[in-house]
Length: 74
Image 1 (tube, rainbow, N blue to C red):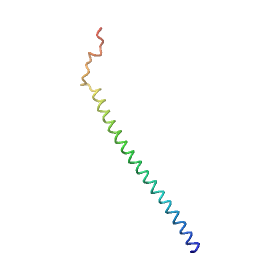
Image 2: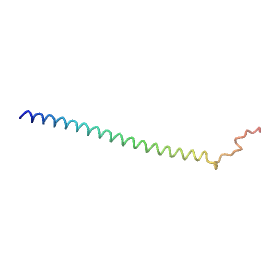
Image 3: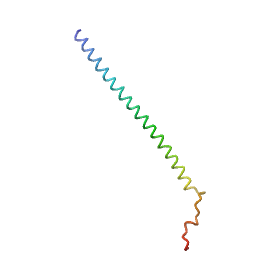
Image 4: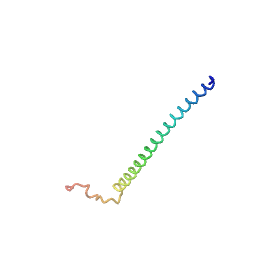
């Protein structure tokens, strides 16, 4: 084996190791993106529910009676 062949072999091995490392990194990032997407979806649902609850509580047609705000001694 010539020096050129050895250099090519070393370079090929280094490139293969870098590629394997990059594949591993991409897989980890993909998993993290999936987890974040799932969490964002859950949070969006919670915010939607909270907005609906807030609208119910603050709506003018609320079951809250204005006379309940005045103390009985007035």
